[in-house]
Length: 153
Image 1 (cartoon, helix red, strand yellow):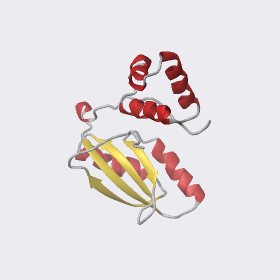
Image 2: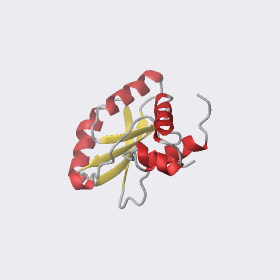
Image 3: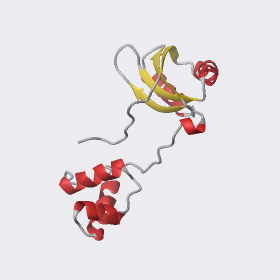
Image 4: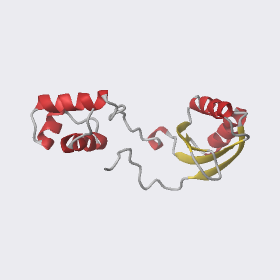
């Protein structure tokens, strides 16, 4: 696919702000009829510009209000240990994001927990069973000031 044009970028921005918007609403906002907008959105999806549509859940309302960023340092660095770590982490429901990072740590996890006791149980019983971990460092979020999944371009 050729590079997205201005209308494609407008559509991506609008869908990034609200993926529940209708084709009619999108068409009105980009001044096109429904059919070309529908075709553009389908093309953006099939070419991977739109990975998926999600609902952003309010974790606090579900009593998962404790957000923790957990830095992980692996015991060793090699391909099999890295793959093993990622495979183990993907199975942990408390982990909602996982990044391979540079610097003093190897991975950064975003974790949702009900409270400190739940996080302690998570660290001891779930993270503690991941044999490739050398050390961890936790940072607790006091207030979430901005959380946006949209890419600004």
